[in-house]
Amino acid sequence: TPPSLAAEILYMALLMGDIEERMVADLGCGTGTFALGASLMGAKEAIGIDIDPKAIVTSWRNADLLGLDNVRFYVADILEFNERVDVVFQNPPFGVQRRHADVPFLEKALSTSNVVYTIHKRGNEDFITDLAHKYGGRATNIIGGTIKIPKIFEFHKKKWKMVEVSIFRFVREVN
Image (cartoon, rainbow, N blue to C red; front, side):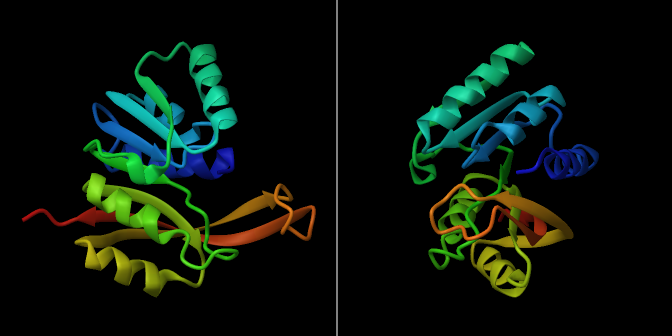
């Protein structure tokens, strides 16, 4: 997640009362941008989960450099994460190469937390809101943004690609 977009999302979450003294998870955390940012902004604890061991090593280094002791990072598939948290942040795969690759992320997020901030490729808003609704999620905010994606995978054709995204804040209705 680009730092400027992550900062915008984290600031929105702070204003909504979703960070301070909250237990936060960053699913598919990469280098820990959301977990580290939430920690710096007053989260009670932040947890980052990613399947890439190198990304988790970088996350731990970043936490150490920032002097943060209220963050934890784990190498794991997000489907293995079963802790209840107050808020989930995530920038899942968009499902372009593997159709609906973002679905397990949203399902896990809404089964783990009552508040979810999630980034998806623009144009899929109806699909994403319908899916969230199946799990009791209601979109309270949807904002637009742009992500500059570097060529990091073999299937990427261009050096950089600008992708229009929608950032959702879902609240899960609790019965």
